[in-house]
Length: 341
Length: 109
Image (cartoon, rainbow over all chains, first blue to last red; front, side, top):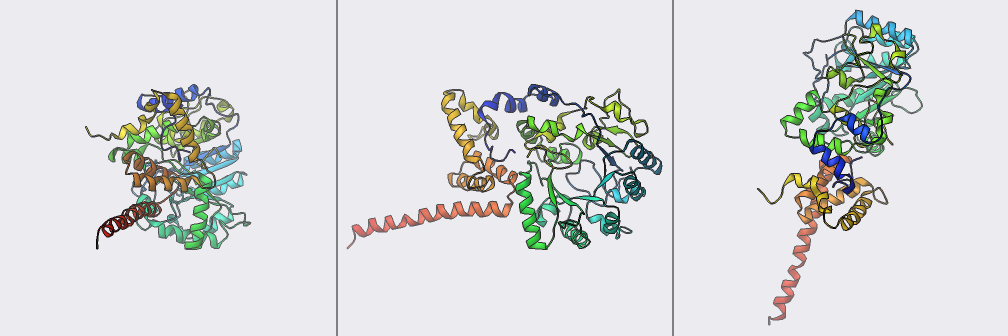
């Protein structure tokens, strides 16, 4: 991690710090480390972004999601995704948004993916549980054995509300209590509840194991709440977080920080090697961040979920840009947290 | 131009242009000090922040404020560390008051 490296390393000056001042491509940086970034043989995870509708409007949101967004997945595209899950037997279906639960096809997507044998992860923002018609969500999750992954930027209200909106911390705690009550986040229950830490500002996340221990201790002691694991995720310099960086004069410094913290060891574990992301219109991407930048998969590959064929993705190139430095900084970052222990 | 430039922090390694051998020795020691040991990185970052305030070094304050955030400290913890440094500085000044008292007493009837 970058922690502890308050001052730059002398022998990295010619690379990291200089690269931060001069234009440098992500691919160039990877090649400079003697590495190549290609897809793995298998596509293990289909990450489904059902659209931008959300009950929250978080300051760091790379999706630019919010209550007024209307771009959501249709029943027809959801049907194509279910068909692809049945046909290609993805190990994992990872459903995100926005708040994916607000999409009318959400429960069908979960149920049919489970019926097809896939492990299902839902990126659940906790507060959506208090929206009309969503009260039974915890029971729905439990009945289908869904793995729940929820953002909670910090174990204190100030940092959480600053990022996710006033009152979100208190509502999130209430939702966590409800999930705990039916077994989520309780050791031995088999019901996985993971939390996501992402920095409430223009800095890198701390070491995952260290901050996980703090979260477990503080949430248990202060609020009687439990969870299984904490994932640290770096804020990506795109969309709403990029707007924040620019508005506050932090863009150059943050990008320099990401480039300086480039960790070659993170490359092998990048999620884009084993994941395909599909948007609310059915288009395919190498990750959810590329999706938000409208960077589709490499031109010669199938463009939509209807045409998806995993054999064509094996070992193929991955579309990259400057934001990819966010996934290789420090201990690395993915939708499953840091990638280097 | 002010005497302190924010960008100088990222140019610290320019100090290695002359006598790089000495600078490399310094950096090896400096980095080794930061590693997890009997104290965690976070505890060390908080010590660094406190010392930075005692030294009133703007580069160090900037660097260690970031290090504290990136090792998981919050503003309450950081502010307590700064109060510790300030209390020590205040106490160190105040105890020297006895030197003044001694000096006065020595020449007083």
